[in-house]
Image (spheres, rainbow, N blue to C red):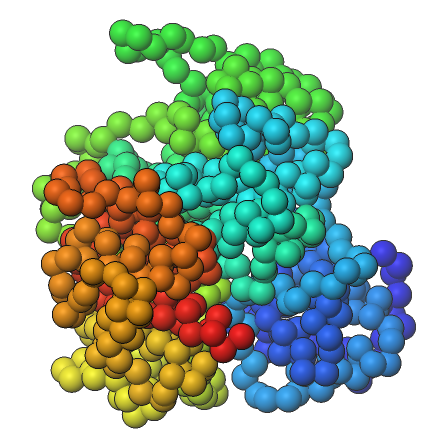
Length: 637
């Protein structure tokens, strides 16, 4: 990139600083690619979608150290490339169009053929190698695997949807009923259906797929393919880096540290704590990140030595890590020697020596997460002063989230809220996520009233409480939610009962909003949806009928399956559906099939099969509402 930053006028520089500060909501000195893309979506009123994406991608390409953050200097340098008067004037209008621009998620605008985009080749190589290994023995992927990391085969391999569906199931098992994936006939129609299934399922596990559609995947748009795959892979890598899934992580508790603090940490923070735990045992200095501090590979050598099997168990074979590579003076050669030791643990994944030396944050974090999953080398503590029985007394949301909690959390993350929600209650305690969700349901938020991080040490909780009070006030006065007995202090304290009451009404409004958008009516209540379900079933000459969203017949999933068959007759294969007397396994299989087919025909269903089997009325309502929206939208279209 040319170094022409000095050519910018003082006026433009001041405009850019103002824009940067508005995007940089936490005053960290950096902005993320997602925040930049949201800013340019704000500009789409006067720029075609492909141009918005092109500009955003130029900013993302300027992320020189690939840490997914862009400094003001990088921001200014890339701006120099946007020389046209049209772009510069539009950008200036955008940053001043309304005070308090919010930047919450999304991955791209609408793509356009012929638009040039950039992507990181090292990420493509890393993902290809990971996918080749993960799907090596999958018979449905024989026509795709192995892919060549040196060419563009990855971008061609996603077009039939099979690879994406399989990767989603690897990250979150049983998300997709594989009976629903079209693996034999690969026509344009079946490939599109597979991709719709994959994208809706990706949303259901918490991936942000805003403005990505099946055509983007068929076209193999590189930056979109890599962005989606990274989200899917990351969810899988981080799935077990959670205390409720691995109680041995309690061993990472620091001296005099409150257990609640450890429990509220993000997977990335826990991963960093895990590395430092083992480095301390090795007598080596701590690291603060997965970029600058690991470039010399020395921390990795000591980590590998600590976590490698010592042969202590009956069936455990000792693996000795050769440490002589520490003496290699050349950084890149030392990184190669370190990775050879990682290969002895079958963990040479995600990074090349060049990625280590460059400090690629994303790929190094993935490398470490895979090491944790393979060799955590932690024991459940027995002598560090923790009363393990107290874990049972902690709130279920922290010890282990319920299925409903996870559904709400995945829904929020799929909408691109920032920061990412790892823990439903503790991550909502400052009110910011809730306020972002109001915008998603078109309830206006006055961001001038909102306190943003970083919060000062003195009075920080008061600032968060003010946000929560505002969030509850908006719910009562603007959204017209029923929030009797709920105050901002309940959200601020992380009360599960009160938080769920508000979050459910947000999700419900979001779900039925599509019905209002297509003209069903401003006020959509449960009875309107139930009446539509029954009238549609009757038109399809089905025997199924529901009296309410608590109807016991829903446990068989037959009302859902029959409804899908009525609105999309070719979607249901009758041989896949169990009728008559059913075992618990039969009911679950029907539910898995129903949820996956609903997603395949275009319904963005967040509910899980168990929600149908157990007849969870809230989630059942969302399934029927999504199917109603899909059906009526098709009729309108």
